[in-house]
Image (cartoon, rainbow, N blue to C red; front, side, top):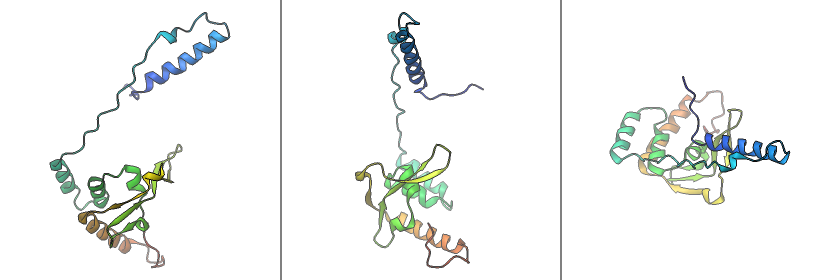
Length: 160
């Protein structure tokens, strides 16, 4: 089975080869750097195709009852980025006031783990209004988490 590479791989390989040949020219091991004459095209980013309203409705219908349904609803209704969605904690959600505070993102580390980081820019830290369907789903999800929580854990501690 062939290994798939990123669209950026050819440009990266060219860059490394060009640097190595440039070093060989400086060391007078090569008369010239032939990689200078090669132009690599910059790959165009994949075009983002958002779901249509009908596709979104079908997706939410299919996700109905799934444990992550509130997350899916938040994603579709708010447009939050994946890291922002996964970085949310209960302390960030005001279900009475209908607001979410975006304070952090959840990112994968080089070792394969996960880490919570502040948002990339100060302007990314913001408060957003939560639509009514999201509020209902989140409230149900929090109640379900409270019931599933370890009974030996102190009751004052909110699920994260």
